[in-house]
Image (cartoon, rainbow, N blue to C red; front, side, top):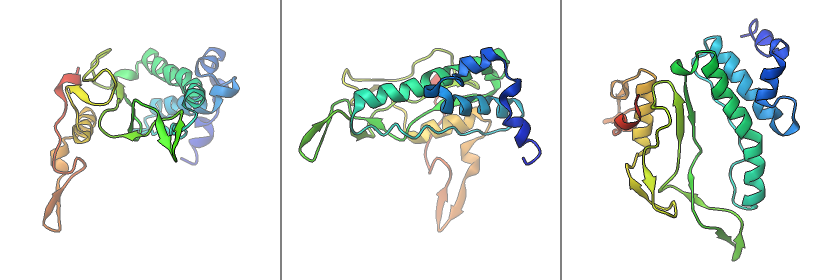
Length: 200
């Protein structure tokens, strides 16, 4: 990486159109846009796994203001990454996964007896989106009730999600099983099946 890093980090050869698409010249989108552009440059240079983090999504208060701020920081660069990968012929072979740590309750949170413009952690229903790399285009799999509180159609356990991602990466998760202390372990614990309904 020592010899590749200076060239990899040099965005001067990118066109003005590309810089604008990622939002590099705007204060609000520059940071995440730079990360997304760097991710594209890494993918086209053969880096097999790239992990992007935007760390300020934990909205337990000021939801209206903070959500608008974070969406303003990430929507344009994230869309630019997908468009750029596609126009360069890289999206078919690149799996993009966008996920958070948890779902969110559909109602406002009460903290210390005060109603807050925020939402609590909610493990019962949440969304993950994937693009490219062998998933169906424009497909929605699963549904919740009208409040987003419970899954009502095609539930996907986290082990199934992990098995699906591994499958899309060409890995059979069951072949990664190892025995330790009298128990079988694998990346999907001892469960999980690829979700056939999302595969192209």
